[in-house]
Image 1 (cartoon, rainbow over the protein chains, first blue to last red):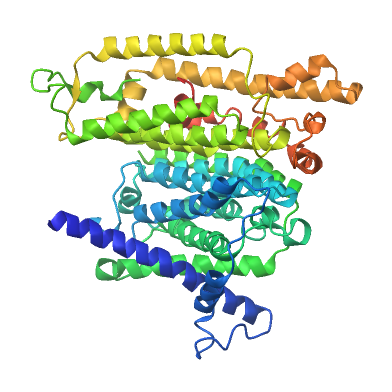
Image 2 (cartoon, rainbow over the protein chains, first blue to last red):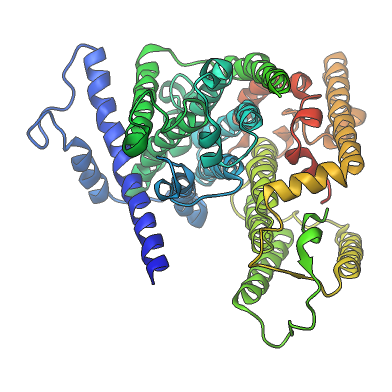
Length: 322
Length: 261
């Protein structure tokens, strides 16, 4: 009975995090973008600085008609948002937030592989949406999504492998247990490559060619309305949560901090992830969109060689240490 | 590969076939679902649906691995097959021929030969597995027999030679794909009319999609997509080059999982 209660509680907490954190990031994005662009952002909904804007947006989305285009492949069109969103929920289960077994949804032996594998599945949602919409812009968006995933999955995997080599384990809590502060400079190249590749996999600006609104409307999501469209947006923000959490755990030491590692480890994790999320938003406001060929070039000619160099460095240091 | 062989117990005496445990029932049910999905994959007339059913099939296989305690293999299965191979497949389908609805010409004339080969391969595999394991049972309560550590140790202690052999095979395949795509490109620039030789060359290189074939098939959407993806493709023939030697020595799990199928 106690086991059942424990599992239920963990699942519940992860679910609540899954529902709230993306909204918090979304609201932060509203405000941060507004202030970086010299305006106020949403101020009305909810009274205090428009805190309820996203709730209002959600109500608006729920009221809209759920349209399926006549030429679309109905079932796949309707299934796609779920395929895009659910993997991130599963990934959240495996991200440890503090020391010990109490602070992770589920300890998974091959955590890195689980996380990267399931994140890759999420892209299938965009592909399904792009194909099933029976719209040429959607199809173009889906194709760009696929090309982007194929290009950026490799550097992401290689840099994650570098951390796994350094720690001697592929379990996420295990990596955090083995973490030392000097890993930070040691793995910094890998961290940057991982973060950039993750951004590209989420199709966040400046890597948002698949949804480039000025040329292909909204890519794979062009035909979506109402709640299903909202689910795709939610998937993007859940993806930011997952990416920032993962980068924190793999490269920034997770719950390790200069002080207060014992009861307050989770604060460090959240703080680091929040700073990363801020950087994600910052990049969106700062950089122009990369062209499709620049996207591919960045991955294959810069990120992949850099991640290979990082692996070589990790191997050499590891051998020297031993 | 048999990472589990170390921790298997020959406990046929204590396990009967008539009193299955919950895990065994789950294994059977998932197996049936996987088998059904595989059947739909090859019988459906909607090409993209076939690819998506393949996702279900491969995912079902991953669940089977999980139930056999081979956690690492299961996640690598999802990572390589669902995350990469199927995405590549869908990418290729959307580039060339992905109509919504049924394709009347989806049935191949080779289907009886294909069925024979499939049955023969299945029979061989079943025979090998049955002969190798006989009545061994995985002890679910003991230490995980298929954990990453166990898999890695058996792979790099007992099975290093096959593993390296597979790496070389993959490397050869990569180099071959690059050579073929380069050839196709060279002949295409020489004679824009793309003769028979180049088209066969293209069909044999699925890993380097050349985007110039779909114009003869009038479907709902692919026509406008021809230009854009070919632009994205431009770096693709070069693309495998920087990472070509990489997976072989540096990435132990992924390439080796790719081969046995």
